[in-house]
Image (cartoon, rainbow, N blue to C red; front, side, top):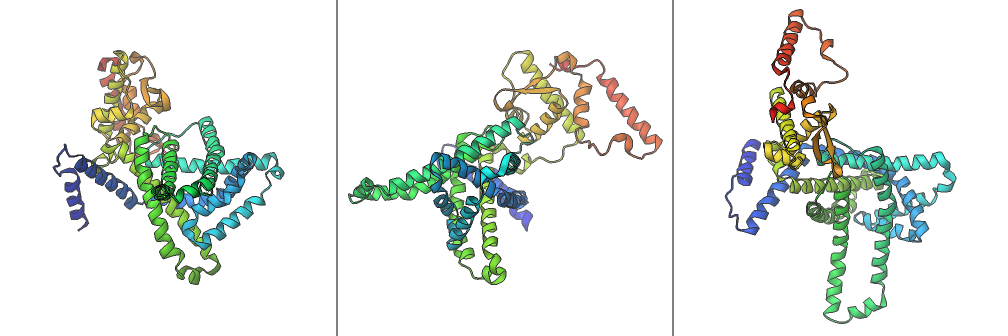
Length: 436
């Protein structure tokens, strides 16, 4: 039954003939494909697992994060906006959200940063940076990125977000509150049609601010270059899911008496953890939508990163090295992982896997913004074909087991040696320049 439905869905999404001149049909089909990819990720369960792990890290890091932010905000005189902003974020929890917000503010007030000392302050920042690192790891996984930022990049990027983002967020909330309480605005509300227009803007503003915040997150956190258009696309649907889930959560979870009856005094904590989980799941789903919008070639099941055979890995490695070397030798435009994927017909994820193998064995090096362009790391004559094949053939080897540690018969050992010698003989004297 499931296979039949899946086959029917595949035919609908990828075999449906549409009028390419119809803007609506093209974008509707693109949206359906993107939602299909995001839904497939959720069904696979990994975004849910990531969201659950972030719940624990968020609870552990919330007080230190707010303590650091509170100290920065206090220096700018806008620390009074902390509680209204928390109330806004926890609005779906109703009265329980106000109670949680007051408890958090009370807890943060009791943290005296000056009394922590040098070691305590370091621990405070490390805890906050750990949360940021785990968030980046979750977003990198969504974007199929294996490499992470260096320690220096991580420290500077995270620190700027931790210190500046709360200031901008709370300052924005303060400006909004001042605007709403302005006497000039009150007098304009009495004049039509300006009053209706301002009320409409006031209703749309929370959605726009949420969407801009999500866009900022989707662009900044993944360790790759995210297009603004794709980030906005994911942020738009994440905002809709955020607002809709907030209303549903309030109606069916917060107002339900079952949780109070079952968990008693722990009900407020359970509800708070559920809302954090839902929030992270929405953010990761929005990131998935942004990813598939930027990489539509990865939506189809054929573009999933299946286990590659040794023969396929070897051919891809040789093909990638030949393409990069050819453009380098003839002074043409440098290759990126995406351009290589489009040229070879393989998925971006598969290409990145092979590129990581070749880079880790120092056959390729990266350059440019975000290290997105690939170049040979040595002269083409010094890169032997045998080195390329070896780099991809042993890529899946693990440090806890080497080939010599396998207990095998002498005839098997000799067969392995003969195969290696045959490969070495076949590639002897041949280098990367011979391929171009």
